Length: 161
Image (cartoon, rainbow, N blue to C red; front, side):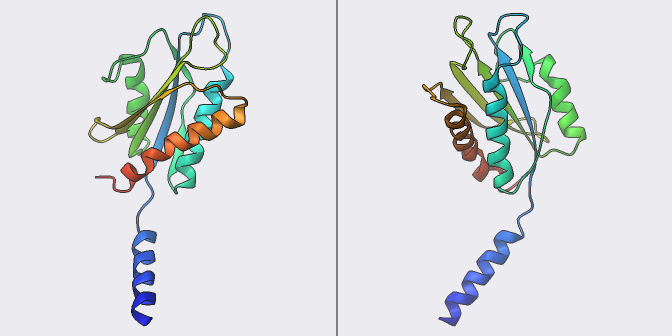
């Protein structure tokens, strides 16, 4: 019994000593008609992702939501390079880019969401997640979906190396 208690205490102490990662979150909207305001789903996804990372104990910040004409490839585009550099200068360990691809015909919800986790120091993609839009009945359901999917990044952020 004493060995189990000691083992549990040591395990908890080891986990408590893991440092929090600093994460910058950037949302990019594509496919929306010019002149339209920010889509509600963009804010919902941003909040869901930030919640998941914060709940996991990470330090989270965000940048203003951006809008591009098309989805960029896996390389950091010139438009996003400035945000990436700001994250690096701000001391971020990771950068999460959330790309929301909206259909021009019905821009209420994105048709697909692509999330990429980058290691800021190396500039390399650590993990990618692709989500096909569901028939969310409410913003709350969409928020929970965003949070659940962002939670898949958390194990990859345990060690910053």
